[in-house]
Image (cartoon, rainbow, N blue to C red):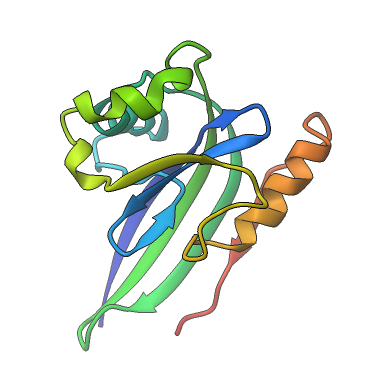
Length: 153
């Protein structure tokens, strides 16, 4: 069986006590993208926030790292390594709901909204992130990056 490793980056975009949630496919998520093999995490984050949200997102810090392995098909295992990153840019974020449709890849997003940890859509994934965001909103200076790994399924 072949193992396919796919690193990705997720952008946690904050606006006071709210965070940006988008609908991509069937669920609501924190905006996320694959990291191309020739890119660094920061380069992918900058490129994708511009392509999909029409904002210049700058890496601030890693908020959470998750990895998991899933059976993709009878021949392949899929190993995801997801980097949840706080990004900063105080100018564009306020207008993202109006301006994201001007982005070159905005067609991948069917809905975009600001949510608090108490009013996320019922199909929001991953739900464990809400606890981490709640801890962060309570103590921004004391919050430490977290790591979670999941067993194969």
